Amino acid sequence: MDDSNSLINWLLDGDVSIRYQVKRDLLNTPKKELETLQGLIPLEGWCKKFLSKRDKKIGLWGSGVYSPKWISTHYTLLDLKNLYIPKSNKDYFEGSQILLDKLWINTRGVAKDRMQDICVCGMLLSICSYAKIQHSALNEIVDYIISHHMPDGGWNCKWWGGTQKSSLHTTLTVLECIHDLENNGYKYRIDELKNFKNNAHELLLKRNLYKSLSTGKVIKSQMLVMHYPCRWKYDILRCLDYLQSADIPYDERMKDAINIIIKKKRKNGKWSLGQKHPGLLHFDMEKSGTDSRWNTLRALRVLKKYKPSEL
Image (cartoon, rainbow, N blue to C red; front, side, top):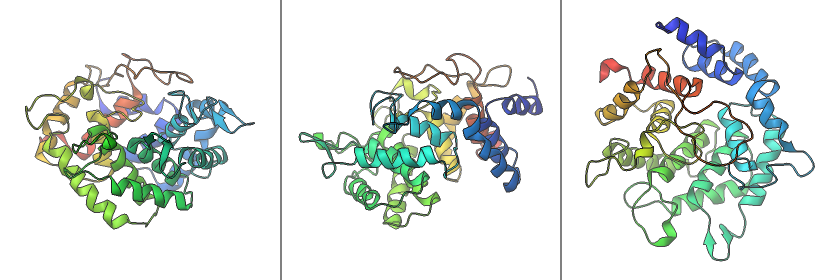
């Protein structure tokens, strides 16, 4: 593959969810055609396989709510959301309602000795807002997230341990949920969330998206690996894909991370799939080490937004 047309054609030969995002994000396809294509997503390929794994008797995937990872209801719904299953899909909507009911319990606690994880809260809001669920519990989760905003501009799942330093994992997860709340028309405390969002962007950019403030070195080598699915874990492609989707203007501090993405491109013009996060799977969408439509799609839309000529 040595030209853009052949690369796009290779992407379009993939799963219907990939075709949908390629046409939407790279080819600027008319809305009506996109709606028709999105309607096919639950009927074939990866999405159909995920839907088939639901136990209709109990309404769950993997016989669990948050665990086992990564086949539980929580993570399967996250996968379905990222496939852009139609928001009106009955299985997705019902599963999201069950998840909210079972995961947001004990007045923000998951046990007597443990408070709710901020990353879980962010993912839960993303899943439920995509389903357009209207429930007071969503407002409670927003309150909870706002109340645990860190002084340095982000969030950390280990807030109850006394830390005052944000985590990139948690901060990006919350940013994605704020983006989903905005996109799906939720208004509750949205202006406060937007202000926090700007602070969190600055927190990421100060670190060039992957560097320690104190040493200037890579915070963690895994942050430079192009994973998919990302789950709750941070990496630079996930971060850049969020920034482009949120229409954040190019900032010089993105440059190093974007250059890393560019250098990871193979000679055939594609990007490979990095090592997966260990855990159970319903099935493999792609194999680690092989050419990845997920990563190629995401890298191309990042580079479409932040053109190499700007670097």
